[in-house]
Length: 537
Image 1 (cartoon, rainbow, N blue to C red):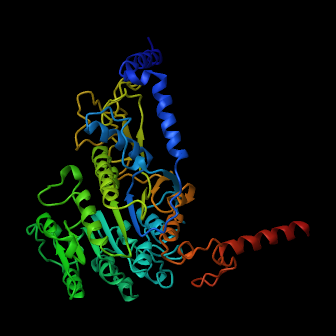
Image 2: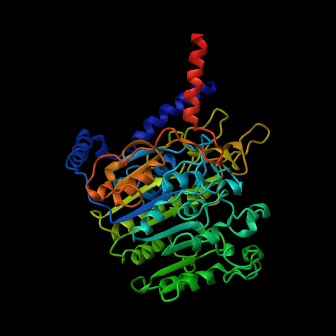
Image 3: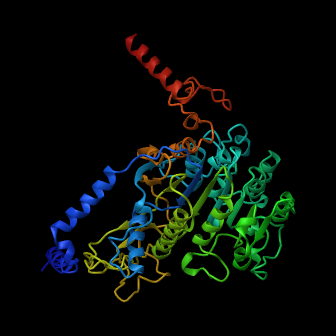
């Protein structure tokens, strides 16, 4: 029997054996009809919530593409001893679903800086750039001036709302930085990261902008080492030189932040004990930095030292919701992406499950009639879900259908990354390898030290006031404008003014003030006209 016939036979056996694993109730046609009727009626009964959003809860799963979303759903169910596929994530309950196109101005596939600027500031930009439009150039300080764009966090603060950021990464990372910083490089975490030439041109680091640009009420994540003078011992890892302060300018930004809050109840904490002691009812400001850099993965987190993303989300909401004018809160599941970069699906999926529980906590603590809750991703990762696994089979396991080289492979694999393991034109034999452990690195097709992102659209889920605005396939920068409209913050206040007419449109004949040239659209029109005249002559 050749390999082709062997594969066909194996597939036939999979179908026969797999069908026996199906639940008996699912073999009844009426089960599916009844389920569909209930869903249909719930959609028919749905009425748009047209209230003005008092609060905005924005959940961002960094690198949480559709494949990650689906695989995490299955894992969440399997962790509860279910088959997993039929599990309902908290995210699944959001009635309004759309897609966002994630490309940046200069690349088909973006990074978290370009995307963060898009969905938070409402303007698409270039790779590696935070809080600036696409006229800015990566790493060129002089290109910053005049090209700054502000975020919905700033719009909300200017409207009198309380604002906060919660992240599982350092708070200076691309996503949270997009709410408050303007930087030609997302990597300028502290002044030690900025070239002397950029300093001479007046550029400042992201950490210093964190405490200066916008008065942020709640700041939770990692990133202690970018806030203290070079050599400052870390309180948790005093013997670890890599955890010590990085700043060359001698500034102690944590102390500066405390001094700026005199007369207010402001707490700085770096461990769970002190964090738990913070009373949200009496706290005006909170800065909680639990690690020198990024936080630990959920699967490796010490619950005695570091709170979960569920706990940090709850604390942030309880502090912010005291404001009668409402709040804006960004919650980032940032380490989903970082686990994917290492081809570690176990870690990425457990991060996503924890992220989903944080979303549930957010819904529990807020009222839907006044809180617009958004869940989305900035971009995807090159994760594939393949191989005809049986119903209920571990999402971290192996396909029962072997490849033509007569070796097994995992259900989840990557398009590229450090998991490339081809030796002498052969894949590794994983028959005796446990692929369900947190340390397992999935196989990838192309060798890279870290995965690239992937460029497919990402899902946008919404519920609450004006959630029906988040439908269809939209440009990613649309998200910020729709949130601003729903909450009556920013430039478009028509929703709270009872107007429906569009605001004054921007003129087409714009001029790039940095280059003195006409816009690309105008240049294209002139070239087309010149071509027509040439042909006619």
